[in-house]
Length: 342
Ligand SMILES: O=C(O)CCC(=O)c1ccccc1C(=O)O
Ligand SMILES: [Mg+2]
Image (cartoon, rainbow, N blue to C red; front, side):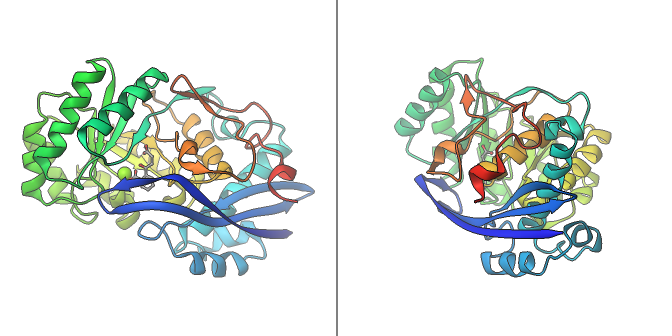
């Protein structure tokens, strides 16, 4: 068994402004594994705060000689981005060997296309409204707005301005990236109570499961957890009644298999699942698209992040059209190994 590692770096065309800072550049590793004569590819694009560091990721990947054993042994459990690359590459190789799209090998009734949300970074009200209007004109029916970089009244005003501009039929999500305390979250949720948000994502710190559970009881706006899933076990997040929706990032959770485990638990507890990227390159995005397509439900996923990147590893076989992404029909991820790895 053979493992190849190729480092890469891509700049963002425009930074994604969040409550915890701007994301400006993504650096990672493309990983190729050969199993019984079939090559599969995966991507490790660590994001500090969410995963191990780049150096830790490299060390973990360098130590892999038998990919299947590396997953089974638990050796990659503390390096989710590295684990993601290996798990995705194995799943891709298996699907290519079976001559089927990855999504179809994960679930026989997988979706062939998925709605996705437009991701709108923090900006002043006018700029936010312009970005939201552009997204709607491009066909998006769901918009996710970053909040938490300003005071809650200002954020609520931004969201109200967007609702007024896009009308009642567009779904609006807000993501505070763990930047608020209970008091601030209460103020925001009171101020947006009549706007009809689809959900508020991660208002409080990752560890504050009880705080999120209290917000759910006090307010009608649904609550989604994102950072919490990388910090505590998803099983605990579900058991704490802390979330209406789990935001699952394959890169942060350790791979497509991990996302499917979390989704099964979520489904048993009637909790929704939304799959998103960490602004990954094309291989990581395709992996997230296939795993999202393998899950039941029709919520929009947070996969429309290609446009943040200035350049990519290869041409994108799943561009966003009309607010949706089609799952490639070619075997595996749906991208030629030779296009990414030479
Ligand atoms: O969910 C989306 O629309 C895109 C992904 C996204 O917002 C994101 C991207 C990188 C790091 C963190 C996050 C986040 O959801 O908090
Ligand atoms: Mg989030």
